[in-house]
Structure formats: structure tokens, C-alpha cells
Length: 266
Image 1 (cartoon, rainbow, N blue to C red):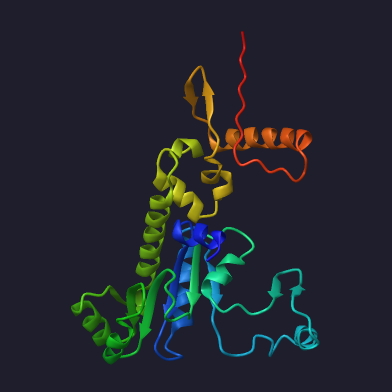
Image 2 (image 1 turned 30 degrees about the vertical axis):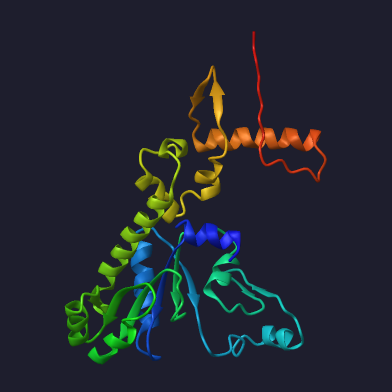
């Protein structure tokens, strides 16, 4: 597991929810679409990762011709969207690691048996409750069948009808905020906010990113032996000045891990 994965998953800064089932065509995509709509209403735009056994290139035409000719990375762009096709990745960890930007919330359809994130199992009948009970990270069981939901509840599982997707989206929102809040180790005042909950909500909604706030915690300003608290904007500005100065006085190969500056004024 790379350090990037450790940062994103183990520190809780990316929250992953897997929609799984024991058989195909039971409504995983329908549930995922409903959750996406409701999360958007809450101000959250999740990244969607779909696991499929069919060829992605079947209906893409010209891109398929390049792929079969030996191209390993293809970008398709038009005025409305951009699609990237690259070499396949086997694990959910690798896919999340390769995302081009920080992602606070991922909905992954598939990846049954993965130990990443929380699992939401979609079932069709009561007998399938036992089949999903051992799923790693099982969090909710969802079904169109009322008897299946009632059985899951009787066995102590969280369970809802698919029609209650709005409630499940709210649960995801609150759970993600809690996960991210628990992962924040800096004082929220450094981020210019009153609480870790506020920081977590702004991270979840994409208003701020870790690089703008909690990842700048490695700098301390001490004046007359007393620490001075800087918000993230001032911290980033100070780091930028120091890094710019060091580039002019150190060789390009030198990358200091610890920097100490002392300024004494008479």
C-alpha cells in the first residue's frame, strides 16, 4: 500500500461507500443514481467508480481503434466532457490512488469482498441477507422487498427500502463528516474555522482541500517564545516565501525535510 493510499484511506480523508450485491441486475446502479442526486442536494459531488465485466470500448468507436492498435492512454475530449482510458487497475485502492485530485467521497459500484470503506448491500429477497452478512465493512442492507428489510433489521443490521434513498444519502453525509472530523488532528482555528465539524463539512463539499488547510500543519511561528496561530491562508503564504527563498540558495537536488529559521531583532 502506497503512502498516498495510506493518506487517503487510513487517515479518513476520503470516505468510500461500496454498493454490492450477490447477483447482477438487482438495482445497484438505480440506488447509486438516487444517492448521487440526494448527495448533490446536500452540496456533495461524489466520485463514481463502476466495476464492470463488459468492455468499456465497445461503443466508443475511434478510441477502441487506437486502443487495439496498442495505445495505453487515451483521452477523449469534447466541449461538454472529458473521458480518459488507461491501463486496467485491479484494486479499488489503485483506482482511488490514481484519481487526479483529492476526493472526499467515493461511491463504488461493485468491488464485493474489498476491505475498503463501508459496504451497502442490495438484495432482492430475505434469503440473501445471510449471503451478504459476512461482507467486509457491511453497513447497510437495502432492498425493494419489505420482508428482506425486516429480516435484516431483526438480525441487527441497518436496513432500508430502496425508496428511502434520501434517508440513506443523509446517513452517508453525516457518517462522512464524522469520519473526516475524526481524522483531523490540527486545531480548526488554523483553518480559520470554529470546529473540526465545520472543517470536515467544507472538505466534504469541496469548498477547501487538505492542501489548503490541514496539510500545512508542519509550520510553527514562535515570537518571543510564544506560538502564533496562523490561519491556512497565511500559513500557505509563509511556506511559499520560504520555499521560494530556498530554491535560490540550495541546489535543485537538495530537499530539506526540516527547516529552522531564527531572526533576532535588537
